[in-house]
Amino acid sequence: MAKLVLIRHGQSEWNLSNQFTGWVDVDLSEEGVEQAKNAGRAIKKAGLEFDYAYTSVLKRAIKTLHYALEESDQIWVPETKTWRLNERHYGALQGQNKQEAADKFGADQVHTWRRSYDVLPPLLDASDEGSAAQDRRYSNLDPKLIPGGENLKVTLERVMPLWEDEIAPKLLDGKNIIIAAHGNSLRALSKYIEEISDDDIINLEMATGQPVVYDFDEKLNVLGKEKY
Image (cartoon, rainbow, N blue to C red; front, top):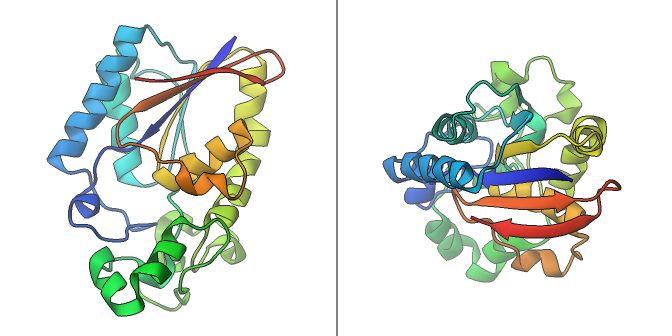
């Protein structure tokens, strides 16, 4: 049986300040560092061993992966960084304080932008200095792939090629995988893995720094799910 472990990055500096983060490359807070280390200790205690590791190209996820692997004595595990695991892009909301956005646009509207499956946030123009189109780490991507804003549906659509081309084949081969990423890219993966409906996915939360472990059979049917 193959195992897949998902970890949402530890608390970031913008989680702490209640700002929309998205693709902005914000670092972990001190508490986030400790959460990531605790995740690694939990992994070690549970005896979880990995063959491959995946993360996004954003340092809060990368550092979470490294802390977790280091604390579980697995820092050597082969690692892939990919934009496909980035947090959902919050468009023009990125950098805004969530409460101030609620005061400006209305709490119901902001809640819809944050939690709905298929409603897009206000989009960020590619010419904006904060656009990912201006970021060197995405310079090799087709500009059409760089979003100006995403909902969970779009996030799932860009995560799925990674699942189908790399992660699922490795799991089918009996390999154990750890993914350290973001609340919404992991919610998107969980939606697919658990076959969660569009309506019910709104209720799924990913706690920062908590390992979520899936057990699969030889056909990638979920046999069990545990949290550590």
